[in-house]
View 1 (cartoon, rainbow, N blue to C red):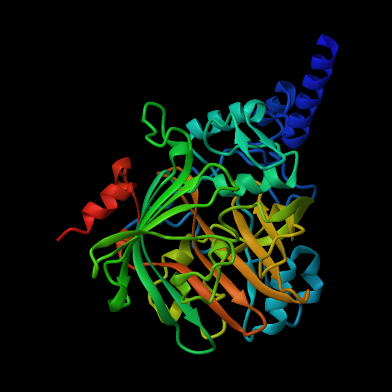
View 2 (view 1 turned 180 degrees about the vertical axis):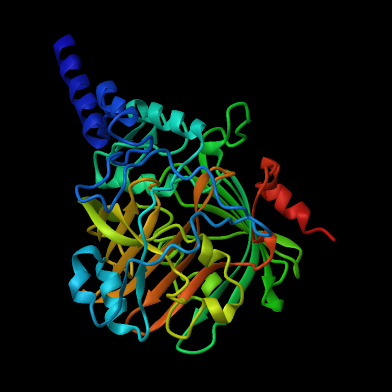
Length: 450
């Protein structure tokens, strides 16, 4: 009897284990590489063989005088481009271009890439580095993509799977408390059409400095409150989003409607649900290369590759005049800066039994920051469909590499959406501590009372 009970118990234990296999974190010896051959976030510290990618030495900690902008120029403004890639010479450089960039160069009139010297300027606060080092030996992900023993910031600096690598992109540092005043435009071969203007407050509890209380108790990786300013019929609407640390959890979101003076739960704010911020032209998960739950795809690390990617675009973000920034066919290529960097190449293919209008996607991730910088999308017929670019800039005062403006190009319709085109005012992007009580449904409802 006792033997039978023991055997039954063994089967039960084995069944439970088979349903939830936990992928172990790396060994302490492996984690020590984050203090030697790897950067604190897991990139290769050394440069490349021919010297076109320099050694990472801590990131860009100083900037040129800021003047009237809080997005200071980083380098000598007289620094010249090394080369220009356009439709006439794209095939000469295709080994250092994503498939999406090759498609844009061949299909979008006037599109070009200006390549500048590489500066490995990415950095994050020291407190975040300490959390990442601890995560390397403690944080785990099971076969259901549930994360455990996370200490904040990047969970898997030395990833063992495609899902872990994708998780890093969703936790990538982009400022602790940020206020953004920006607009979204849709461009279809003519003048930009305003989709929405808004002010957003964002907070990342996983990167709070030591001593600052996390009211979300380690369960929220990102919280955002967006207030619509235009168009006029939507002015005053507010959306609150609380994004769980688990990457298979449905985001919690609430909308406040000033005309009705009521708060309602927003049903679905991820996957391929059309985004109201672009009047449905793009999906929720297309912004910033990819955002939201990763659970509908099988992800694999294709490898690392040296690519030309948008980088250090402080000057683009400081540009004045919408007509200078957004051209009829593309963002102004003369304002954009591209550099040669090593990227993680991660590919996602739709899982059996799942649905999504993008059955295949590939993201290119900066090794020094875990920010997605480029993304490619294919449609259900296997044809190339969309290419995304995410611009970054450095603010040494944060300190950190911040992603802001990003573009989603529809190669088939020859149109594009421009997200987070920053206000020309000084307060287009600012940093200040935001009370955590701001990010609660009760606070949202109270804020609308007139």
